[in-house]
Length: 422
Image (cartoon, helix red, strand yellow):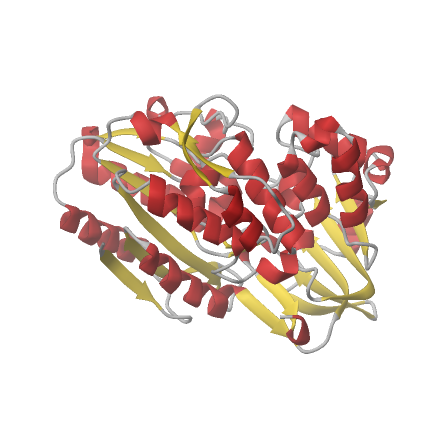
């Protein structure tokens, strides 16, 4: 087990040259490889710098980099223009599409007794360790799992083995892991590197990924003082050490603790990154521990046109809505379609305020009827943008005509919490 690169402190700003040099330093240590697969995230981690790191790996290995498999999870495939925007010069014929419903195999199962233990007796199923067949059977002598460590609603801190077993995973693995996190409690998980969902993935990694040559390339990205993005750390290794080092730095970079609850938050969703409430509800997940009771969360969503990235999930969201934990658990018990898609059920729990605060969605392409039909309040995007212009607001507290609001330009980059709640 090796740690090849570990560079990062909260005020560091790694340049493009730094990233490429550090990556090449790590790849030199690995020695020559003949068949390399890169597994980066999709455009929902556009700011992770994984696109650039994948390109640097392609430049390093040349023809030995045989394929790039974006870890889509349940997300829609990336169209050519999005691939080009994120990965730039990499030839499009190198990219493979991960179909989470059909392209996977089960490597083994985490036993039911383990799930019962980590879920505190709430769940009674085993967990299948599923991954894309390119990873398990592609014959690669190196798999580069590339991504960003940042607080996450399902697994506490994103990435590491999640990229392989969930991002490139299958329906049962994705659904059951998401449901475990939701039932255990999102507030008990977010920002914590060790938690029940991570324990399940660690078990699976230790037992079923041992013979697959995976090296993890992990960034930590935060905001610079001028509001631009800054890479604060790069960690490369083949075991949990690089993940824990990145997680420790991410808590310092991406986690903002507040002394007073937010009464009104305005969150902007970049239209290149967020096209659905499935993705855009990061605005809910990442702020809920900082919002006051009876607060309002306004979500400005110029690119959002659907609820789910997947037609089946979109239909389930429209049918059951974001009604809170008790209603969702009851719906799972009574309805076979939702019980068969526990990832969707978990998302419905994650995306609810549990009646504690108001969520006002302002999408460009969904109607008032559609938004109110799933349990949210509706806001007109144009009028909200006129009042809360992202170009005019700074991150954090702003005063708009005597109204105090807390502005977040990209919810995917952080986690906000009231100090007593964490």
